Length: 149
Length: 168
Image (cartoon, rainbow over all chains, first blue to last red; front, side, top):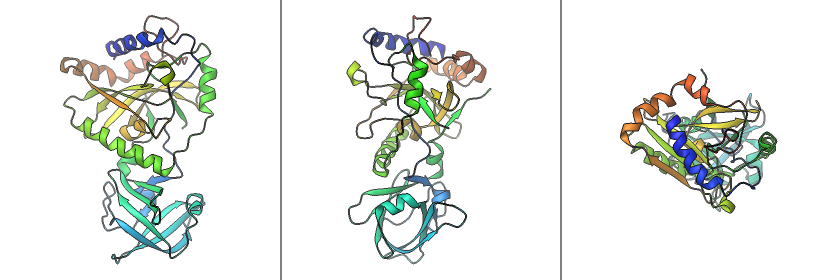
């Protein structure tokens, strides 16, 4: 690691000469917490594929057939969604504030799209995403974990 | 835990770096679902590239803070290493805002890619290292005592290889 850092440091040195009077800055942060995304384990139930790591749903529109509070989880809303051609409904738990911004009501439709990372939920009318459900392994990649002795 | 990544190298400058880090810790950054979707799909590509990497260690860098005024694209760097199950983590230096000190962290590819300040335009660089360097580098990288030994107690935003003052 030390050798590598020296190599990297050399690259830095080539640029640092030009930065002596630059403002003090640090790079941006990544965050594991978000009002616009959640893990499959915490957010989704009732889909056709039960694998936690690679759960899939049918792509396409889903009708909102019920909107309710999530028992025991303050500030969370549970949507019960019914696909046009799918018998089993699925439930999506997401922050109430996130859902309220969409101003969707029972009977409206949302659109689900499988992605490599999980499932994107978007409004059905303009396909603008409002909540992402990440496969658990992807969700686990968001957090930074300190290296301890 | 609120974190701000400190570039291991290509970061700019500051004598009063602790106050600078505090200022940046106070910034709030909430990516929209659309922005996250875009970054996560990008991370999927990075994942594929790492999966295709023969070695178990690689140098990974990304754009983050906009350093274009200095002609710098990549503001944050890490050493990516492959776990036994095939997953990759980026071992890197972050400033732990809650603790007020720098620490070494492991983070998955998705989290690393999502650390940018600009979801509309981002870059990731992967450098595959010479085969003969991989084993000793990996051994050093995964040695917690050695890693901690390299970690300075005081945060400096920049890393100048020939300076005794500006190291992180």
